[in-house]
Image 1 (spheres, rainbow, N blue to C red):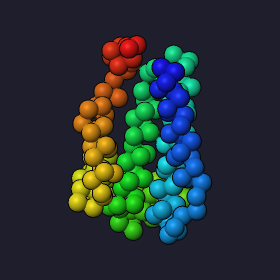
Image 2 (image 1 turned 180 degrees about the vertical axis):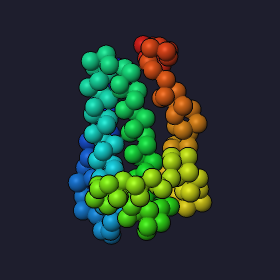
Image 3 (image 1 turned 135 degrees about the horizontal axis):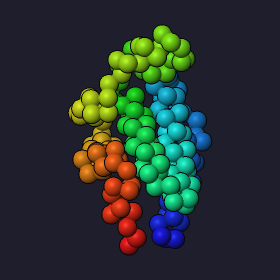
Image 4 (image 1 turned 90 degrees about the vertical axis):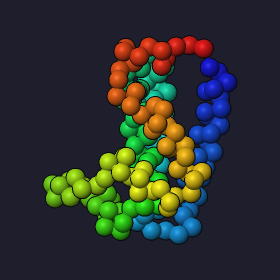
Length: 150
């Protein structure tokens, strides 16, 4: 576990370093993806804190949110229309919340990225969805094998 946490910290530092660089082509699309990636990293930190506190069910729920934020970041870059980018990134009001109802679900975002996103960006998301996404809807208490120590 110590090695896993150490490697996780190295990766986290690497990603945070990437997020600190200025954008090559600044746009609403790239800024939105950057914000979503920062949310992904915040979720990662929170998951570790929850796991340390033995709050596994909450950590599982947050892992699902983390995955969905990562998919949205990819979708913004590779497949979202300009209208969808505007809807997703608009200031939160009653009207914008209603408009956001038309933003696709994760599965639709994944399909929209097929043929548009590079395979090395899309494949890990597809594999996670195929192997883990559904089980994130189930509590840790119902799936203790997900947390079995190795």
